[in-house]
Length: 183
Image (cartoon, rainbow, N blue to C red):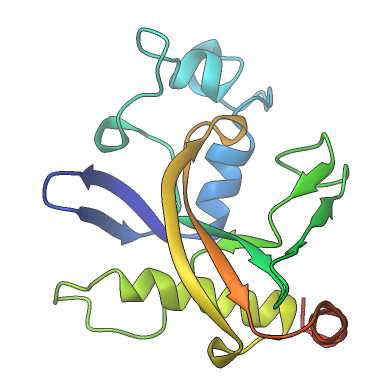
């Protein structure tokens, strides 16, 4: 997993550093849990360790949370119909259930040289890995478009890059591939 440390909108640059998925679970996902293990008598991460600053999330550069970069996509079939997914109310971070993006998860990158600057294509490849894992679709099956980067309030500001994927397959074929996908 990769922690998003800073966003420079003028330069269109994201600064990332290596992190563990377990860091995200311990901070962003459990931000409202009274674990009894926080220092100084703090009850929750969101309330006592990293509360809002003037009604806003603390800047990523100052945040103590893992803030691992996530990816999510709403996938449309060849007719332009969205393939919705119902979120389970048993999920750890967002328990309300209901409509959700077609695919989402922690952004996993392919191997790359850590000492060189990378382009946005690396994040797109992370999204492609998630689409293949959850829907069984290969990059040739769809066109991928970045839409936004946002911080999720239920996960204490966890950053997420949102995409739209327009698939060239019919819904029936997409459903069959999804049923056979690893996730």
